[in-house]
Length: 440
Image (tube, rainbow, N blue to C red):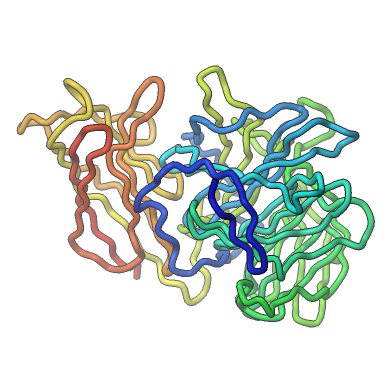
């Protein structure tokens, strides 16, 4: 048991914790990113050829499954998971559940029983930087609760932001994003009302959300997500199956919104999109997100683990993204990998994985051993990411059951002409050489 902190109270929660090491360093600017030409990026989504497969965690069923999904500043997936017996459509309790999509680790979960004397479960969610907005459905209370994520020993409820819903029915969809032009946070609840924070710091106990207008966007089975484009223009993504029958493919709707300090305009019709088949299923949970390379991505959570106890997430990423105005772009280039000791007898089969989901090589592994004649690999693999963010760099060894992590490292968006990192994962010893340059 560890203490789950609150601004006004302390609640005991169960935390299953696995050490992640330096990968958990926080992004320098923990707020959601903007991305230009959202419609163009939506129309140029490609299915990630390397679906994220996570070992461990919870099995989902018709009565107990993922409800919502978000992406934190460091790339961690956070999901809500409803548990308990079905009574109508109400569940008794649930969890906030964390996984690392780069190193493919199940990190832990937080027992969600708030308040403790009310049967409640977390439903739709969206993360904005390190703030998590969670819609709550219960037998006695419904609305939105907020949490601040620092690391797996410190997840704090921001009780001063708690928002009780008065509009009838239960709240199952919520969306949260940063408005850079107003320096305020935007909250959309149930596709019906939009709120604006009255300060730029949600951790300040004096901060509140103020209602600024009504919208009329249909509920989405897998959740809502707000994406900022530029100025006052946002897009509300509604994630769900494309069609009404059980075999319908994944899909989503995109509804443009103009959000200003004086109100909201949602008079434009939304557009519906269909996605190619992938591992995840929008019947359960999903989100839209701008990754640290500035690309729009759509992520679908799985229903259940497969026979090997692994859960597969579908990820679609825009082919091209662009930095928001005023943001510098940096390029991380891996120039060499040296093996001093393999993780097993004979050769290792290695590949690189970046925090934006890119894999190098895309469809094979490189054989390497610790003999002086064959212990070097010069991949010249690169990825771009934005000022104020970080990029995860991971060297992995292919295994038919589960890939092993040999080196994991977090790279800051700061020019560095000659850098190296040593890792000793799974009994091996490797050194990675890389450089970070500003893209002019």
